[in-house]
Image 1: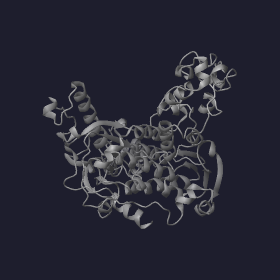
Image 2: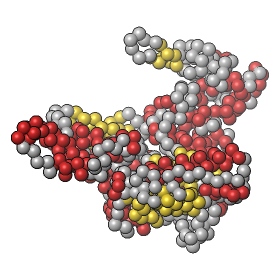
Image 3: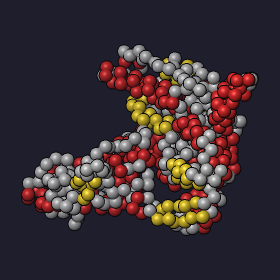
Image 4: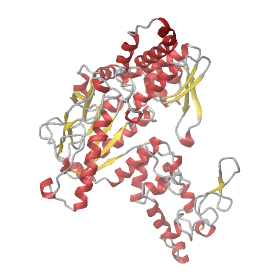
Length: 544
């Protein structure tokens, strides 16, 4: 049974005598818990639904329903980004549930970037003003107006009336635009969906939580393309059509995918860590460390001493500190306690031994470079074009505060995702831009072709990002599209949705009531639709 069916069945139970006495407390408890699930907007979920098949928003609301059913008082609840996976329509459900917990005498401390949640708070604490070493201070606290009145508060800047977050003109999509066609998608709750994804565009898949967005984008489109392109690559065929490739794709969860030959590569850019050891750092991941090592090997002093680029690697013996083996930290094992990491006494955290650190370029050693913030490094390497280009990209996505040697495991999910995007931007071929319409081109512009581009798939990339960070992320995504690639995003954030070239809206609700295409087109076209996403977009546009 679904939650709604179970609630009706339990409410209709007619027991008498001994059976009524036995079941009295049990039935009351079951009814209350089903009521809470209804209250958080999950009437469509089957009671035997496996947890791994739940969307992020559904899992979040189930946890809230469990707390609502506990009837505890005097508890301090700490919630980290509770709106993750929730459609703007569902935010109201979440806020009502939080207010109900608070009304019972509980305290709720919420870490959040969602504007509706921020405005609903009774007391705000704004941390900043920047990120990393530039943050860590309480910039402002109090009401929404207190944040708006604080000139240092970036959050307050975006909360001001008329804040500059406007949707711009989408790239045109017409009958001649190349598309990736998905036909007969029927996995999970998808209902034989047929949908076209215009190539060379920023596409956003929207819909309420549980409507089938991730199933459509990741489980069907991404997984099928990843397997098919891998099979085609293994055959070593580079012809224009599947027959010439000698490949008959095996589709899973759909009838067919057409136009896949136009895609050279498919890549999921998620928020998983970019490295598991301190040896992986910002500079190594974005691919500039080799160029920096070569730069130091080309100095006169390095040549006199016979040092090659390998001397300036902290991953191989020779130039690295022999005590910490190039990690800059030493691990001290503690009995019955977690291990403790301390700065290496020998190299002082600079990862290299003394002789290597004596080689200077523009007055800085290789160890000094690792400790540089990206903003400083961009100016330092301004004359080295390949290095400077990548560093500028890191600045443009808002990561100028990171150091080049910051260990990958210490990066947040949002930071890791933006570093992955910069890596792709650095590799993007600018010559593809001439074949595609630029953002803001007229509706009559030629559609161009996206043959040979990469399809990037992102699932909720705005998780953990502030309103300012979302704008920087959008700039990076638009640069990928300008370079001839296609970006497909599953998203609930209205700032992101409003800047899409093309929106595919699923619904009308979640679970069995979803899984259908209820709208597709530009943000303006979706705003005119009577769907949850359309209504949210109209409200968003009306407030700006």
